[in-house]
Amino acid sequence: MIRPPKVPTRSANNQSANESIQSSTNVPDITSYIGKILTLNHQQVIVEDILGQGGFAFVFLVRSFNQQRYALKR
Image (cartoon, rainbow, N blue to C red; front, side, top):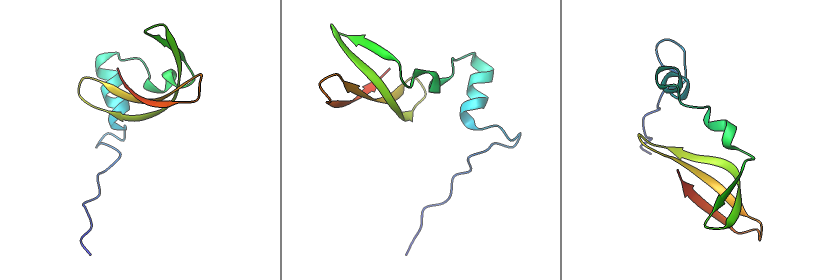
């Protein structure tokens, strides 16, 4: 069985990639969004988790108050 290569979670200076980006660009802590209520087109959703992060945006798992779950790119 072929296994994909392991991606290191720490950089050479022992900071995670997220910590390194935040310290160099003054980006707010992404985990601070978890539990926040956001209003989108007159509907409110609550941020449940972080699904991913790219060069220009984050993707969150959000839940509406009628219990539907969505991916939100911000």
